[in-house]
Amino acid sequence: MRFKEVIYLLSVTVDYDEIGNPVETVTERKVYANEFSITSSEFYNAALTGLRPAKQFEIYSFEYQGEEKLKHNGITYHIIRTETRGEKTRLSCERVAADG
Image (cartoon, rainbow, N blue to C red; front, top):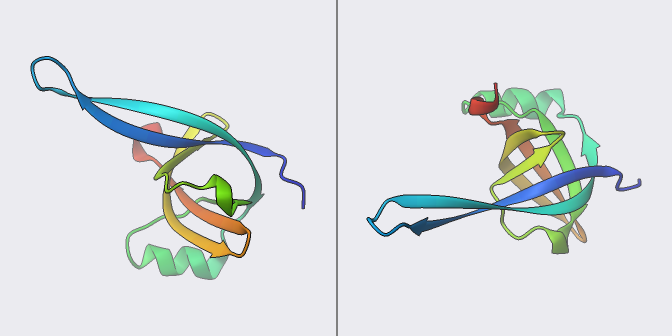
């Protein structure tokens, strides 16, 4: 398969301003991926634990650095599961509730 989908892996760092309030800084990193649909068994097994997987992406393992979120087509997803298969890693994601 060709890695033709563009996703952005999101890293969040927390700093504090001069009066001690936390300020989050989000850094995006562009990565190419293959998009897969969630299988029905994976969907229903995740639903038992309160998760709602929406999409799955496959990227090269060296590109994944433990990010907890990604963005695809302007929509932010929370990474709920990772599965490494040799040189490739699959990221199962659910849509972030704040994005609808």
